[in-house]
Each structure stands twice: as structure tokens, then as C-alpha cells.
Image (cartoon, rainbow, N blue to C red):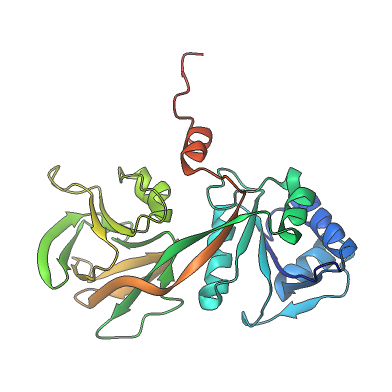
Length: 294
């Protein structure tokens, strides 16, 4: 008897030229009699903007949904948004990369049929990725207070540097005089943190990294902590405000509030090919070992 699966399909509504992958997925999933659910905005984009004939499906509203797998069509930015919508449901996410680099969205749109077949045959691996949570003693933070890649504490664009007083497990570490501080997961080590000199960290290494952004002192170097650590921060700014960015979602807050960052009580499950290697991905995506002279 053929397995019955339900897919929650999410995609980038700004990639009209890359809609062929979405159409192919819908066609193959429909052939297998799979149930499909998709968010209302994405459904409207497909039917109204792209004039794609979408079979009857469940419309997702307010992130209330269930599925065997969540399918993400887009790049890593789309994947991060989808991960925030999956949240603590811990439904495995299958990312088809129609963007650029694709560390998280690691399946090629050219292999949609083979990937769906693997899902039906349980021929895949699932990686568990840690998530960070931020809270504040004085006020309730806006939006979704979790991040799969990183939590960044940043100055406003036109402000001078900020002072970030940092404690680890209630022990004073240092005060970063910098444009910001990135608190990252191993997953986020190849994202924003990497661009400012942070370390590349192997996934599932149970760590959290602190990487300053443009520090005033060259002695301020990245540090890697155990992920059972609690990080306490207090920011001082001449503009009396600063930014908190969670996987790119930014909000402004008044300075001198007390922030606490810790590992979230849930993980994000990412579907990968059997035998998938992080080191192979590094060589391919970051061109390690490539000779720039050739």
C-alpha cells in the first residue's frame, strides 16, 4: 500500500521566474495523491500572479498547520522565514534551493522527483539544528523571539558605536565597544557571523559563538561557548536606542534594558541526503581549495 503523505508547501513570492520548480513539485506530489497545504499569500501568488493551476489544497492561516514534511522553495532567507513559521512543531523541513548559496536549502530543484521518491521510501537523513531564544527583563520583545542563525545586537546606521556589557552565566565577560555583537548558532556560523570574521562551526557541536562587529579594539576576538550557557547583555548607546536582529528581522529598542539569550527548548529538523557531508558542502559552496589563478 502506497504511503500517504501531507506536505506544507512554502515559497518565495518574489521569484516569478523560478516558478517551474513549484509547478513540478505540485504535479509530482499530486500524482502520488499527497495532501498539500500552503499559506494563503503563497497560494494567491501562484494562482493570481503566475496563473498556475493549483489543485484543491488546505490554506494555512496564522501558522496553524500540521504536515509530515514542510517543503521550502527559495534560498536560505526563505528557509529561515519558514523555520520561524514551523517553530516548535519540529516538522522536518525539505529545502529546495532556488536562491544563491543554499546552505540550509540543500536540495537542487533539478532533483525534485528523486527527492520526493526518497521521502516516500524513507531514504534520507534528518539533522537537528539548535535555536536561540532572547528575552528581556523590562519589556516584552516584539515579534518571534527565536533565531535559527543568529541574534545580532546592532547600532543604528547613523549612530556611533555602542557599548555591550556582557555576562556569561552571571559572570562578567567584557564590554564590547563595537558596531554590534552577533550571538550565533553553529548553523549561523556560515552566515552573518562569517562575514565579520567569526569561526565556522560544525553543526550539532552544541555551541554558541559571540562575534563582535567592527570592534573598537583588535583584542576583541570571537569566542565559542557551550550552548547551555546563559548570555546576559545590557547596551548603552549615545542615541539611547539600538537594534535587535533575529535572522534578519530587526526591531529598535531603548538602551539599558537587560537581555537574556539562551538555547531554545526546541530544535529545527532539516532533511538532508543520505551521506550528506558538511565538509563537502564547505568545499563546494565556499570553493575551498579552488585555485583563484585558474
